[in-house]
Image 1 (spheres, rainbow, N blue to C red):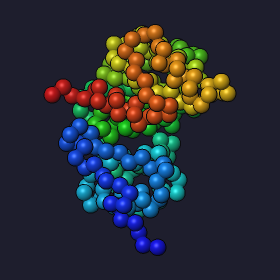
Image 2 (cartoon, rainbow, N blue to C red):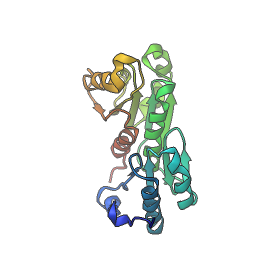
Image 3 (tube, rainbow, N blue to C red):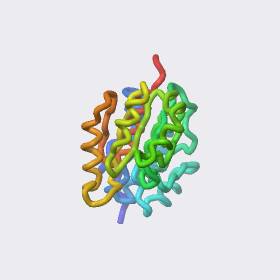
Image 4 (cartoon, rainbow, N blue to C red):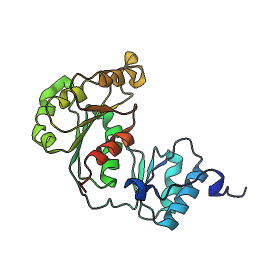
Length: 222
């Protein structure tokens, strides 16, 4: 079967980096492997810095073959090309994962911020069940220009963090939790109802969106 031309299924936005200061990302879930490979081939010829997010296992090998030097981070489900992030500018982004089970989404957020040009620190397993663990990192949190807080279960951590720092908090609910967490709906509603001001909320499991928002907040002042 002949390969489907790129124009039949995608119109890549190479001007986005000029318009917005950040390049387009490729969301791989829902795309056929051959479509993702064709997109990668075009990106390679344009030498366009790109994040491939939500990469499926069967897409990894074709993408890495098409993009020499790319970096694949399995738990974040991201392939970054080129493999080296840009030199960091702007302020520090700190990403907190409430639990170890939230780490894949937190890694997606951290990698996104890093590849959009921000210095980034990832801290894992600091949920509200043991607040002393988060408080041990308070000096780091107060150095941050933006903080991403990733949490499932009750989703209470972003509001707690926002009450202790001056930086904006980007809350990312995850689908981690038991039945009444409703696949992330319970933490999403908790975060939307946070008492502390300065909390912005992205969609369930949207580490990319959280990392992108934090990178924009922490961008250098022009």
